[in-house]
Image (cartoon, rainbow, N blue to C red):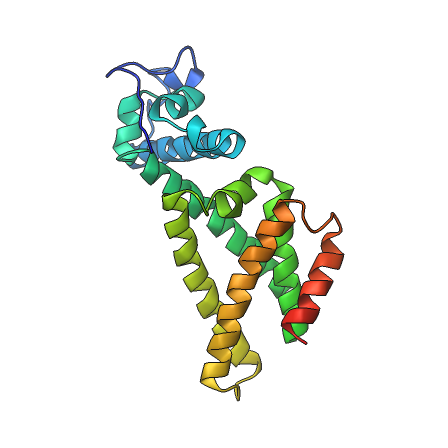
Length: 214
C-alpha cells in the first residue's frame, strides 16, 4: 500500500484536533491512546467509504486533524493502521456474536442461528464493516492475513462450543465440521453483502442453518 504524507510538521487544515492546547493536562499515555483511536476512527471512515485508494497518511491525518508526527507515534505505515482497523471491527463483531449467543437458548441450533444472524446483521448494518471484514479482505494482503487469523480463532471457538454441547463427538468429525462451518460462514457473509441472497436476513439464516445442521 502506498504511503503519502504531509511534509514534516504540517497537519490537516483548521481542525479543532490540531489545537495545541487540546492535550493540555491529559496524561501522556491517555493522549497517545486517544490519538491512536482518532487515527483508527478516521481510517475506518476513509477505507469504508473509498477503499484502499482513499487511505494515506495525509488523508487520515487530515480527517482527524492530527499532525503526521502523531501518526508515526502509533503506526509505522498505513498497512499497520489498516490492520488495527480490522482488529477493532473484528473485536466489535466478536462481542456482538457473543451477546447474541448468550441471549439464545442453550441448544446447538439456537446458538448457531443466533451467531449466524449476528454476523450478517453486524456486517450489513454498516457497509463499512462488511468492506473491512469481508468484501475487501480477499484482495488486500493486510486484511487477508488478519482474516485468516480470525478464522483460525473462530474455528477453535466452534470446536469448543461443539464439544461443550456434544462431548462425545469424534475429534476428526468435530474438526471437519468446524472447518466447514468457518469457511461457509465467511462465504455466506460475502454473498449476503454482495446482494446475491436477497434482502430477507431471517430467511437466509434459516436456509443456512438447515444445511449446517441437517
